Length: 294
Image 1 (tube, rainbow, N blue to C red):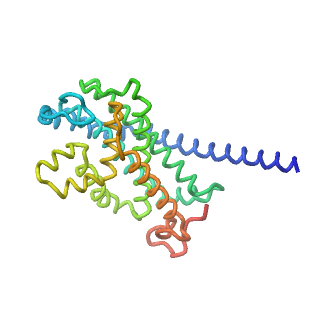
Image 2: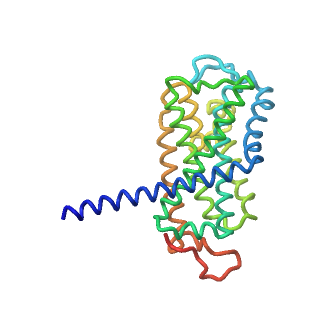
Image 3: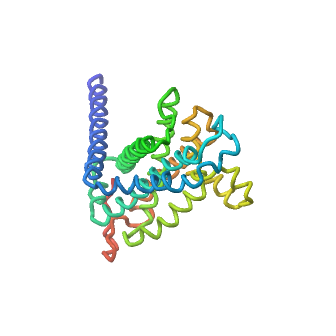
């Protein structure tokens, strides 16, 4: 009896070690692939830096007319939008991961990966972890360049753990959203159109560029209401409040809830037996060419 217990414990340790090794392999693969794609890092930084260096310059003192949470004094516009631009980096990389998933599925790599002797949810969690690691690396690079341009964010200090938690959860939520979208996007040709209906509404109908009180004050009622329920708004606000050590309210719960829902639906969708379609099927291929079970 004791031998059976010891054997079962050993099997569990071996299974955990095998699962962690698989996660590390997937994360390292994504990091190595990203390391060879220099243009991807440049493009990830150019977008937010253009907003910071060009757009923010014209509106630098627009919001210096009121003191609102989490700020204790007047702030220039570039300081306000900096957390939103970090969110932009996380958002675009999360959607880029969706493109990578569609590409891997068309090339047959996801079909091989899903046949690994591991739970499908764990494989998808490993892909999600890799996406979050890449997102955070790009966000850190943006913060460093922003500091060099004179926009200083209070990243270091007693609030650092809160900032890291907010950034990690935001990256995971947006990565999970990209994972869910990859279930629906069947071909690479459909990617750009789908993303235009996701990235731009999520970003522009949020508090990344302007506070909610400005939207309400300007009379844009329907934009204000959409921004209030937009998960991206809550990801940005959690990060913004964390930078100043303030209570983010319901933002963490919205972000974590969205993360769990998106990941659960993606895991369900990547099951070819009961999901949103035969994910292993190549376009134009035979109806039965579905991915193997996990």
